Length: 347
Image (cartoon, rainbow, N blue to C red; front, side, top):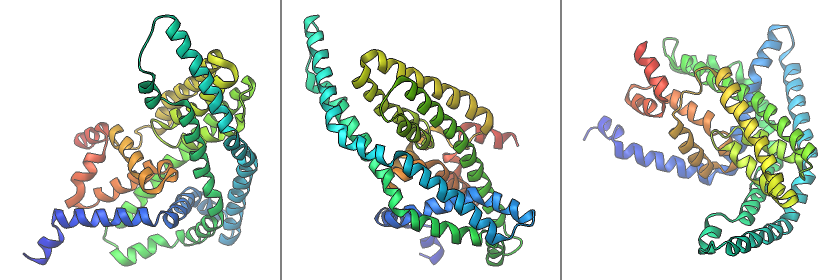
């Protein structure tokens, strides 16, 4: 067997993929801050280049951007830090209230002649466990706070090198290579997605926080921030954001209050997910719905909650990178959406 055939062997490629995935999972405490810094740099690169075009020195632009990001980070931490700790402390009380309400529901059903094995329902849908899961997820996202210094330091150095990276890529690959074109496509696609998603997520978080505050749901601002972050998770992020707030409204106000909270989330999701994002994003992210869902599970398993937040941009990057190699282009096509494939056939 020749060296070339061994190198292109599907078995060797699969083994290399498994090794890389295992390494990323083992090194996730290091990989997660680095990835966050990269995506922050991708978002902030255009404003930095714009300031440079207006004559602002690079170092001044860097300081201005990192001051804005650090200030925003401190604002979020101050806004929800105490609420997260207080909610986690009160979860047992909320669980007890939910159990009481559930017991009342079983009694009502028994009184109307509806009898079935309760253990089946409680194993599938346990409100207390859902609240506990929400608290653990919040603590997992809050763990990013402890890595703030590493994230910001890495972000600063990545952004300071951003202007020279295309030149280095050309020096490595040569001027006739398409590597620079693919690099620009990756940055443009990820930047567009993150930029639009950030704006729609801000709108989602504001409406949720305002609506829950009017209703009187506990920790309304925290649920608005949670809705902002989880809106980055495609398809199911908005559903995950609604569950703890719905359960809390059920504890505080009963079924009627929970119905009002559910209507609020439904309204926001229809406006953002079905009207705003499709119109603004245009052709979308170029990934099939199945791939988006699987990438959510895959990156979440490797990198935790942050992997779920970054699942779409990470998968977009992989798809564009694969599309640049003839031997792996079939994988890029499998990852693409039906509309994206149809558009390429028409062209």
